[in-house]
Length: 98
Image 1 (cartoon, one colour):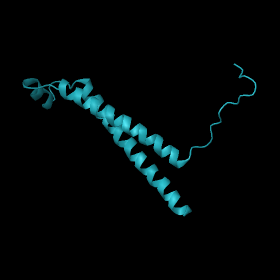
Image 2 (cartoon, rainbow, N blue to C red; image 1 turned 180 degrees about the vertical axis):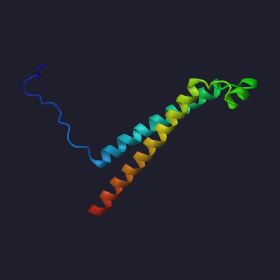
Image 3 (spheres, rainbow, N blue to C red; image 1 turned 90 degrees about the vertical axis):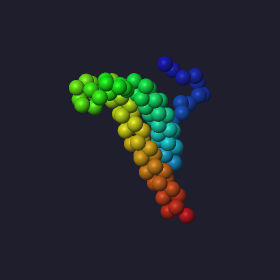
Image 4 (cartoon, rainbow, N blue to C red; image 1 turned 120 degrees about the vertical axis):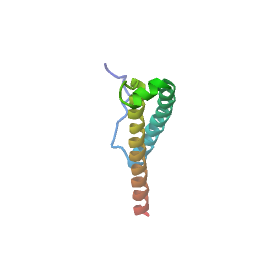
């Protein structure tokens, strides 16, 4: 595929800490929203009554959504931690320049 004459493809350079911090913050926000949604669905799907007792005694299996919700929540926590560290790093870089 050739590009039209006179137009240049946008160059992707190295990611700056500030841009990377904002991108990870957006990812962290999205995973947190998905975590809440999965948690609400898992709470609705979790067994209640005698079936809940059987699950707590490990006589029956948990629904898959309950396990998936825990995984999504751990991804949300990790992405939020990475975002916080990158924001701190970009703040530190600006502080060092002053």
